[in-house]
Length: 134
Image 1 (cartoon, rainbow, N blue to C red):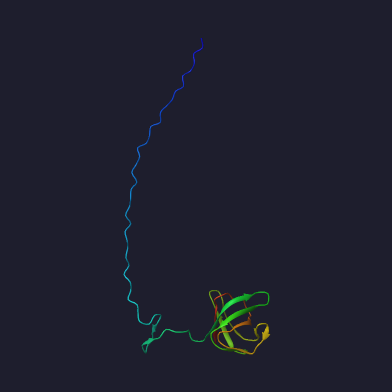
Image 2: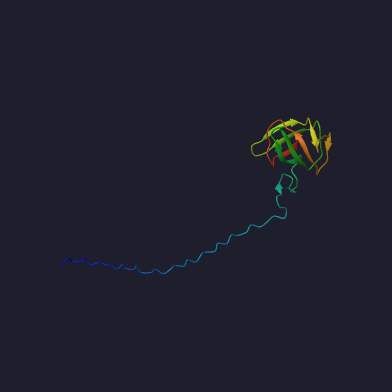
């Protein structure tokens, strides 16, 4: 007779279930600094200067067209052909004289605050670069 092998069934030991630990988070409260009445104000030799617009800021760049080297500027102050402007940004910093300005593809000689104009630039500019008069 042939003896049959018995199947050995091993029982797996169950690991003890650990209770979940709950950790209470500490709430850290920061002391708030007293705000000055003039937010963004700076001190000068004469006293406190009121916060306001930067001096000479004409506008900001909203778009750049690399094929024609033209920038779109949202004006905050008047600007005219022949004015000398400085364009400054994170990686941009140059000065140039305005040779050509356009609005709706028509050449113009001057522009008022609030208008968006196209300006021929000599170097690459980026959005949010500031344009100031020199």
